[in-house]
Each structure stands twice: as structure tokens, then as C-alpha cells.
Length: 486
Image 1 (tube, rainbow, N blue to C red):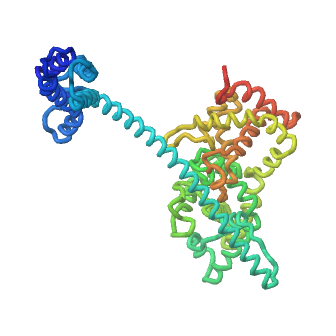
Image 2 (cartoon, rainbow, N blue to C red):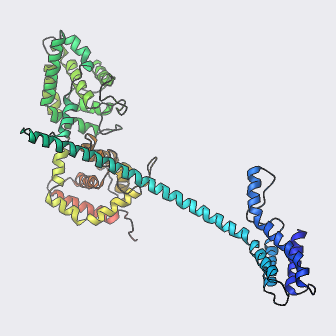
Image 3 (cartoon, rainbow, N blue to C red):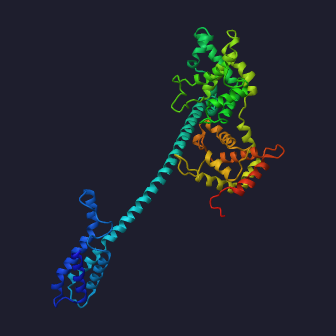
């Protein structure tokens, strides 16, 4: 540390006028030393970085000058400042300029540290901005995909209508949702029924005729079958509300009177085998990578119904046809006894003028509650969002407002949440809604109304009054609201 001290003392002497008669001659060497020392100190952080990168020895402490402590550095700066401003020292303008440069170099290491800190803050800010932009870009891409899909459909329909008009033909607009449902619940795939067709028909022609008759039976009962399937999918503990798990399958069998006490006898074992047999894959169009495992989709459900009909009425064969057995099962057991989802009727109730007036009166509150719980919805693999509420968020809201009790249980809430998603889960509306695991705001309102009428089950009080009472007594009084004081 001797060199640094000598430089400070020399510059200090220069500043105090303790040098000889010829200030330029005497002080120049000392100023050279001070300037070199200051430059060496200022460049030390860069050398330390190079040494660390090359592995050449130990690096110094971050932000320090080797050989120059903080007090010594300040002393050097003070001396240089005094020398630069000393009128009686007789310094030449060139030497004074060099002293001033040396003084500025002393503090270059502090400036570099400040720059380093600023760059670090900028990098963090840039990372946050990148994440924000990526999230919104993904949403924008989803919106663009939806817009392009709708645009393509509209343009396609426009040209179809234009062509039909030119040809002076009657224009027929296809209800794509109804067409999809028709395919899901009425299509019979011969490859899936091959063992039954081989056993109960003779020849290719008879097999094809029997397939057509099976499809005709399914077509006749398509609407109630879809409502039955949707109800049980949304009422059990399966992984999806658009497919039927084993427990939901058995709930359907018991409600329909097909299964008695449950497992244990020969019939129940065969019913269990039917569930698993219908899951076998045959390379059909609906058997893609998204087909759930250990759960039935609509096409597999109607296959299961046909196999159950054969099991229940096996003593009636060979005089009974496959289509006859299926028709008998549906009319005698399934349709009279199985529970059917009535989402359309319930949504008509919620769309009544009185109920809409209640939701309108509490609109600001409900929107703030929705945003609060959507923002709080962080889970595994789920980023913060403000546009949807998942099952955990919805359940958290009801716990916060102390609405759960022996009647309104967590399982009942799960079923209500699932039923708000039914139409979306069985159509292509997920692009507009939040998907079958998320509530958008309109579904949230349906959920609030359903919870209110489930909790206040008096048939003598109008629905809109029960919904209003629930919102006031529970949500308005106890819900966490973003920005709410107290």
C-alpha cells in the first residue's frame, strides 16, 4: 500500500504549495504517479472480471480498489481537487487538466458499480416485461385463431348462400352443434359391434340392416340420451365432465334399475366388463390422443347400452334383434328412471327478467368479487389471471363467505361447478368460454344463482328473491373484494 500513500502525500503537498519554485517541474512526476494510480484503481473492476473469467488468481472484493482504501481514495480525490484549484501553485494549464482527469478517474469504479446495479435492475424489468408480453401475445394468438375460424366459416357460408341463390335452390343452414350431437349419440361403428353382429345376424346384408336399425333407435332417443349422459358425467368424481368414469357409470346403472345391490354377483361382473370392453380402441375417428383413459365418451356410452341390452334380455334371443333389445332397455329402464340434465330449463329460469334485475343491481359487487378471486387463482401450472375462476377459486369464495354447511357440501359445489360447464364441455364453445375447468363471468353468475337456490331450497319463495338474499347476506357481507377497505 506504499505506492498509493506516496501518491496521496505527493498530491497533497502539491495542493498545499509545499513543492519548490518550479511547480510544473517538481509536481509533474507526482501528478503522473497519482494519475497512473487513479487509472489503475478505476480499471481494477474490469481486471477482476477478466481474472475470474480466465481463472487467473483470486479476484478482489467487489467495488474496491486494490491497494487503495475508501479513506485513501477520498484523500487522493481531495488532494487532486485542491491541486486543480490551487491558484498559487503555478501549474500549467496542461498539468492542471491532467490533474483534473486523474481526479475523475478515482471515482470511475463507483460509476461502474452504479452502472452494474442499473443494468441488473434493467434486466429484471426486461424479464418481467417479456413475461407480460408473452402472456398477452398468447391471448392475442388465441383471439386471432378464434377470429380466423369464425371468419372462415362466415366466408364459407356466404359463398354457399351466394351459390345456392344463383342456382335458385332452397338454402339450408346446418346447425353444426346439433349435427355434432347427432353424430356423437347416433353413430354405430360396425367394427366396435363385430362380435355382436357376428353372433346375432347372418351375412353382411343383415349386419348392415341391423346397424341401420340401431342408429334409428338411437336417433329417436338422442335428446334424452345426451341429457342423461351429461348429467352423470357432471355428477361424479371423474377427471372430466365430458366423459363418464366407472363410478358415474355405476350410478347410472343403479338409478336406471339395471344394477341391483352393486358388485359381487355374476351380472355385476359382466356389467363391469362391458365398461372396460367399450374402451378398446379400433382406430376410429374419435379415438385420438385426447380420448380419456378409463372413461366413456358418447360413442362408447351408446355401445355400452347395446351390450347391456343384450345382457339384460339375453334369454329373449335369438328371437330378439339387437335393435329391439336396445329399444326395450331404453323405454323400460333408462328413460323412465335415469336422471336427465336440465341445463336449458335452468338457464331459462336464470334468464328471466326478475333474476337478471338482481344480477344487474349487484353488478359492480359481483364483478369485483369475480376479479378478486380470479387474481387469487394461482395453482400448479396455472399463472395469475383475471378472466376465469377455477373450481378451487369458486370453493375458496364460498368458504370465505361461510356458505358451506351440511347441505351445501364441497361435493355439491363441485357438481354445480361442473353443470355450469356442461354445454361448453360437449360442444366446441371452449374457445369462447374458459374451458371445462374454468368459469368465465357469465358462468360465474350461473354458479352464484345455482348455489343460492341450492342453499335456499324453499319452493314458496321466488328464485330472484332467494338469489338476492344470498348475495346480500353472504357475498356482499363477507366476500373478499379487491380494494375493499377494512
